Image (spheres, rainbow, N blue to C red):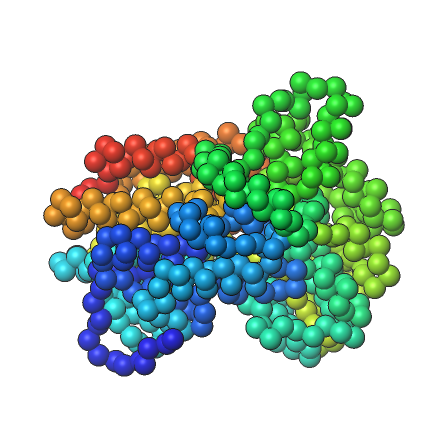
Length: 540
Ligand code: N01
C-alpha cells in the first residue's frame, strides 16, 4: 500500500531502510522485531521482491539452487515452504518473499511506490533526512541501503534507439503483463547470464530470433528439473548441515570444492571429472578442482573443455567458432548456466551476429544496423546488464558530513570499510555494498550476514548509550588494499570486459569492486571487528 503523499514535516523513525528485497525484508525484521526500533522501508517498486520484482524476462530463474537460495534464519519458515524446481523461477521467488513479508508481518512498515531521490546527514542532529521523488521527507538516526547490487539497468546509448518503430525492453525492467513474441522478429542484445537464460525461451516463442553477441561466453548446463519428494525429504533432513556448509563455504553455496589440483590427475581422469561435473550441471562446475579459479593453466583446462562442448553441440562450425570464448578464462566473468543455450543456435529461426566482427552502428526505425547489414526487427530485448554495485547507491544522491557527496568520494571507484560503511557517512550502512563479497556469493548468505552484523552493531550502540558509528579513514584505506589483494590472488580481475570491474559501463572507473577473499573468511573478519569493540570504526 502506498501512503498518501503530503508535503510537510519529516516523519521520524529510528531507521530508514531503502529497498524491500531479500536484504530490506530481513533487516526490517531484525531491527523492528529483535531491537524494537521504529523502522520505515522505502521501496521504489509497487511490490516487494527487489531484483525479482523487476526481472521477469522469459527464462528468468535463479542460478543458485532453490533449497539454499532462501533465508536460513527461521527453521519454521524453512519447514513450511516447498520449492518446486531445482532452480526457482522468478514468480516462485516473488511468492516466497511475499510469504515472508506476510509471515513476519512486515508489510505495515514498508512503503511501496516510493523512490528515494536524496539522503543527507545532519551532523548536529545526528540524523539522516531522506527525500523521495515526490518530496516526502523522512528522518532517521540510521540509514541502511538495501538496494541490491544489480538494480540499475544499463541500456547502452546506441544512436537511433528513439527512432526504432518496434518495441524495446530491458530485461531488468520487464513488463508485468509479459510480452507476446508470437510471430515477431526479435533481436536480443547481450549474452551474459540474462541473455543466455532468455535466448532459448525467446527462440521458442518468436518467429525469429537474432542474437547480437559482443563477447562470447562460457556456459554450463543448469540441469533444471522438478524437486522430487525424495530430494525434498533429503533437504529437510539435512537442512542444518547444508546451511552450516553454505556459511562455511567461500561462495555461500553448500557444496564442497574438490581438494584436487587439475594437475594431480591424468588427462583422462580430468576429462572424466569434467564430464561428470558437466552432467551434474550448475555453478558447482567450478568446484571440480581447487585451482580452477586460482591458476591460469588449470583454468585453461576447464575453459577448453567447455569450448569443446560448444563445438560438439553447435552444428554449424562457423557459428560454433563465433560462440567460442577466447578472450577470457572460464568464470573470470560471472559464469552463466543455461537450459539449451548452445542448442538454440541449431534452430532454423535463430541467427547469431558477432559484434566483434560487425559492431552495431545504430538502431534504425526498422531494426539494428551493424557495420555490414541491417537486421529488421519487431522487438529489441536489451540483456545488457547493470551499472553494478555502485550504480544503485549513487542513484540515491547520498550526502554525508558537511554535504560530502558519495559520488565525489567514489569518483575513482568505491572505497569503504568492509563494504559496510564509508568514512564521512556516519550511521549509514550499505548492505552487500562494494568491498563486501556480495555478488561473488550465493546472495542470501551474504545478505543475512550483513543484516545480522548491522543489527548487532546498532544493538551494541544502544546498549552502551552511544549513538554514532563511522568507519575510520585509515581502516577504509587498509580495507581497500585488502580488497585489491584478495582480487589479485584470483584470476577474477583478468577478464577485462567484466562488470565486476565496471567495464560494461562507459566511463565507469575500472576497479574490482566485490571482496574476493571468500564469504567465510569475510564473516570471520567482521566478527573479529565487532568483538574488538568495532575496531576500525569510531563510536561516539
Ligand atoms: O548482464 P551482463 P546480465 N552492445 O553484464 C552485452 C546476475 N544474474 O544481465 O560482455 C552490445 O553479465 C555484454 O557484452 P560484453 C549475474 O550476477 C543472475 O546478463 O560487455 N552488447 C554482455 O554480453 C549476472 O552476471 C541471474 O562485451 C552489449 C551483456 O550485454 C548479472 O546478473 C540471472 C552492450 C551483459 O551481460 C548480470 O547479468 C541473470 C552494447 N553496447 C543475471 N552493452 C540469476 O541467478 C552490454 N552488452 C537468476
